[in-house]
Length: 275
Image (cartoon, rainbow, N blue to C red; front, side):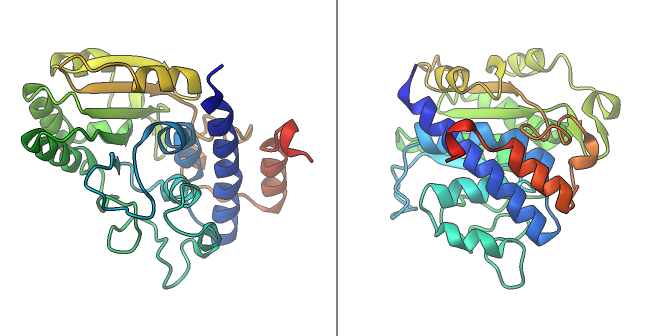
């Protein structure tokens, strides 16, 4: 087994526990989407991406854009765990005057490439970042994490069309395909399937994997480029890791009560963490 998987698994589990603590203490947040995206973020930040947390604007760094910008619990824990700011600051999440507000702000936090939150903006911005790298002959990679409900925004497909046209093989989109959006299932709201065929029609290399499988994530993210932008449809569970949250639209915004919080922490304690 790739030794990085043990590291990523441990960091992802820490992220999940810390996310739930942050949301419980703040009494607000987006736990369902945070938890479905955690494994992707842990894989990127702790096993894949090139960056220097002490020099967050290093021009050689890989870029990451959190297009589903409402899921800041997952992003902030990933950044803190990677050393961009002290982990202790996570306790200020969504508090007055905190740098950790509901949508990421690049003027507040190192490691945030662009402000996101209004859906449909992340991929267009990342497209511009990738085109700049292509013009400059730079070798950095640009990664985007988007929600699947966000793909109902037309701006995402305009960006996808141009990325395919320019053969931006340094650009990777990861779709958090948990099949739920606020209040309903994506396929009941505005059907996306056949999702892979849509991306392929725009000139993208398409992969569909288990978004909670670290080995599968590493394999496809690190596979050689083939002259096309790459989309990874990461099939995930909203609320992954907590039994009563999994695959439930009500946990898009939900906040656990004291009993649920205790149960969540219990379920997120791995045997090797027990000591």
